[in-house]
Amino acid sequence: MEEKGKRGNGNGSFSSFRAYLAALKETPRRLVQRSGAVWSCGEELSRVKARSGAEMQRNLRWYDLVCLGIGGMVGAGVFVTTGRAARDYAGPAVIISYAIAGVSALLSAFCYTEFAVAMPVAGGAFSYLRTTFGELAAYITGANLIMEYVVSNAAVARSLTSYLGTAIGSDTDSWRFKVDGLMTGYDELDLLAVAIIVLITICICYSTKESSVFNMVLTAVHVGFILFIIVIGFGKGENRNFTQAAKATSSGGFAPYGASGVFNGAAIVYFSYIGYDAVSTMAEEVKCPAKDIPIGVSGSVVIVTLLYGLLAAAMCKLVPYDMINANAPFSMAFKDSAGWGWVTNVVGAGASLGILTSLMVAMLGQARYMCVIGRSHVIPAWFAKVNRQTGTPVNASIFLGICTAVIALFTDLEILVNLICIGTLLVFYMVANALVYRRYV
Image (cartoon, rainbow, N blue to C red):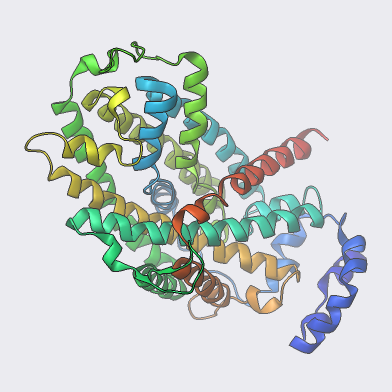
């Protein structure tokens, strides 16, 4: 392994920008040489980790991870996907769809947990695949992860503008600036999204612990909003909506689309669980990885599953499934009810808080992925540096913050969302296969 380590180090190639450009000519040969190189867990934890120049500060406990997991998952997605899944796929049985998706997410979370306990490094899926399938699989996954995080964070930041408008009852079109001459889909500038990304970037560069505390406060308030919506929904709704449709042409019953509809609904709502993988990238900053990581990752998925199930039940009790608005189910359910229109603003405020927490957790995760990829010298080692004072990957955080802000400034939300889904499932699939290979091959 010593020879492989020397071959994979490549410090000379990154000694200067000119040397890096010269080294690009040798990229095909190096890819062939290194594609099958498998690093050991010991090397990831020692020699590779030391390339950052400083240690990340270990100041997170299991409750920090639980809140980070909840904050990362419970964004605005649940306020949108629930309506579509209930109306078009599962009906009131969307509650079961969430349970199925929750079990699937929990099983995937177990894969991340086992790897994170055995190898507590910040690389997440990149490091897991690098020590299992080799560098080529890790590089493909790493590139996919960075693209997924940057694009999804830009999408989340742009959606904040819309939900803030709902919260205060304002038309959000006036918050964006239309620029003539740019392509359709890239011609509406969202300065608010850029401002939010800049502020979060500054926060995560300063301290992971302070970022965690800030996230904890926002998550607590956000969960409070969700519980409020659940209580109002159960108090105002009618039980007959669980089994009866509003239109004579619609099928009745708890599961009007049958078992296939329930599973199709589970596939739709599964994307509301995306975000727990970012918790595994905090492994280098956890005081007791063997104890805190399993509780943090698994606990957050279980809590989120319960919240999602209750939210779905409250919505189905409020409105017959065939009358649910697919784009804004909770907002429209209350808006169409006499005397309850003000709850629409509460939904907007709750979704806005969810966007902030999910954006912060994702930006924490993307910087740590970039940091560990920099340690492997696939990209300049400058990205791997950890600031000695803050104990955070400042270089990676700033660079990715700029990339995210630029994309969020120009690109339409619909274009961004279409780029995210396939990449996310590919990474989860690769990690699950890596665990099976690690155990049985």
